[in-house]
Image (cartoon, rainbow over all chains, first blue to last red; front, side, top):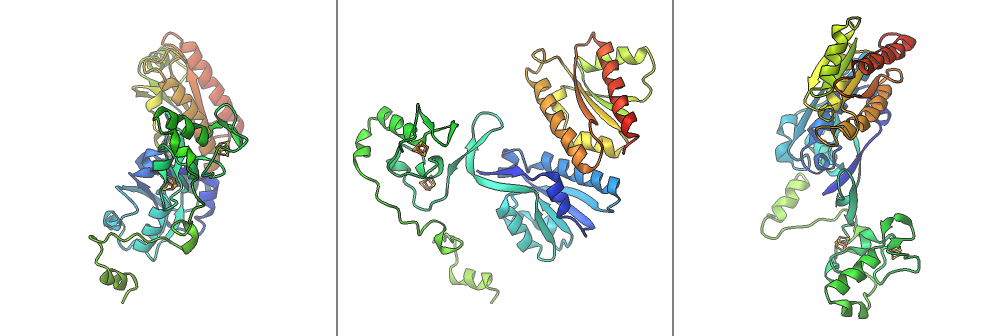
Length: 230
Length: 125
Ligand code: SF4
Ligand code: SF4
C-alpha cells in the first residue's frame, strides 16, 4: 500500500489563508491503513482546523468527509461541483484525482506521501517496492534490492554490511544479507553465481508519468480522445 | 471547565469518589470503556465545546485491563497536547493521568495541576 505521514498542522494552516469553506477529505484505503488519513484522522484534522478557526477568528466553515478511495473518481461524486478548499488526507495520487474532479476547488495536501510499503509490527511502516517497472524479485528471493538496499545494489552486499545490518543505519537490516540468507534457506544459492546486469531504467522514472494500459479493459483511442478532451 | 475522559474501570470510580467529596464543580466526567479508546477528534471537539483543559484518566501502566490501552492513551495525550498548541491554545492543556480506582486523591491532584495550567494562561487563551 501507499505509506504517508501526517503533515505538521502549522504547515496545513499556512495553506488555508483566504479559504472560507474547507473540506477535510479522508480516504478509507491506504492512508487509513497507515493511520494518517482515514475517517478518524480526517475528523481529527477537521476538529483541529475548526478549533484554530474559532480561536483565531478565521471564519472557516470546516467539515470532513471520508470516501472509499480518493484515487478513483467514481467514489468522488459527493464532491461534485465543490469550489472551496479540500485538505486531502489521501495520498498524492488521491489529492490529484480530487483536483481533477473538482477543477474549481483548491486542493491542498494534509499528508506527505512517502512510499510503497507494508506494516512492520504495530504502527511502523517500511518501504518495500520502488516501482522500478521491471521486477526482479524472482532473482532475489522475493526481497527487493532496489527499495530495501540503501544503494539499490543489484549484486550486493556492499562492504559496509555488518552483522546483518546496513551501514547506513543499524536499525535497518541489510537487504543483501537477507537475500543471501533467504536464497540459502531456499537452496537457490546458485542464483548468486549469475551477475545481474545493469538495469534498463526506462520503465522507471525517466520518461515522465508512466501509463499502464490494460489491453482488455482500455478502449484505446476513445480513451485518448476523452483524456485530451476532443 | 476541565473535561476528564475516564476509563470505566479505574478513572470513573476514582473520579466519582473525588467528586463526592466536593470542590470539583468545574470537572466534567466522560466515561469511556478504556483510556485508549478516546478519539483524538473527540478531545479536540471538547475544546470547541468550551473545555479549558482535558485529562485522560486511565489505569496504571502495566495494570490496564486492555493491556496497552493506557500506554496508547499516554502517547496520544502527548500528540494531542502538541496539536492543541498548534491550533492556538497555550501549553499543557491535555494531560494523561494514570491511577487505580482507589486513588481519588491522585485524580484531585491532577485536576488541581490542570487548574494551575489554565489559571496561569487564563481561560481558553
Ligand atoms: S524490483 Fe522493482 S518492481 Fe520489483 S519490488 Fe523492487 S522496485 Fe518493486
Ligand atoms: S549494507 Fe546492505 S543494504 Fe546497506 S547499502 Fe550495503 S548492501 Fe545495501
